[in-house]
Length: 232
Ligand SMILES: O=C(CO)[C@H](O)[C@H](O)COP(=O)(O)O
Image (tube, rainbow, N blue to C red; front, side, top):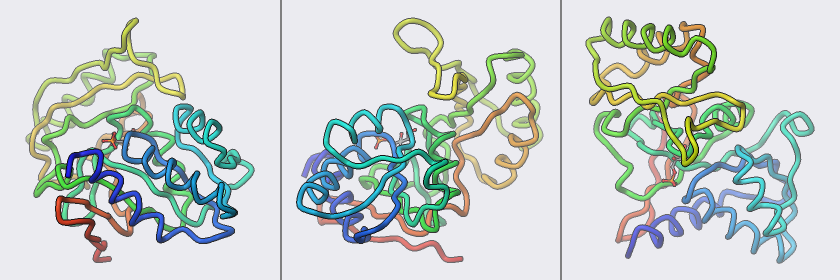
């Protein structure tokens, strides 16, 4: 089974949690897009759901495939969000934001009664941090914000390169008009502490640590999909 087939397996298993009438948060990334494709088939077959997309990219795919969309202001309380992740640990702590949508993803997940993460098994880790942590920052005062991030990291015994994410024509800009610093800290033994320290920096808009947000993770490997439950 190749990586795409594993993503489809995870998306199929997540679809089993979707019921008619649900208000869905719809994630961003290649795994979430497999979910959108499967959801669109169900919608074409008569399933009635309304979705709130977590990015312009996901919104475009949903429109193309006929998945009905609303804004989060129109549907401020959601039943379920299905989204991918860059890393998942056994406590269902996540690193997200590889696709640059972490702010809307976190807002949408927080507005949902439940979040289910879908991923292939390459995303499952013992300790978060092999994937560089995306930190969404305001373009104003970037240098100061960067220094503040370095200080916070040093207090927690972390260090590593901070790279301002680039796209084809310059600095990457998120749907919200911000930039992303990818922080290669390596192992993050205390994700909770790093999360709250980063949240205290004014230039940090949001970061890609999702803690106590996912209720289930559906992880697909060659033998099929298995479900990990948050123990809280
Ligand atoms: O957080 C995300 C986007 O901001 C994605 O969910 C994450 O990057 C995983 O993407 P993929 O399913 O393509 O590996």
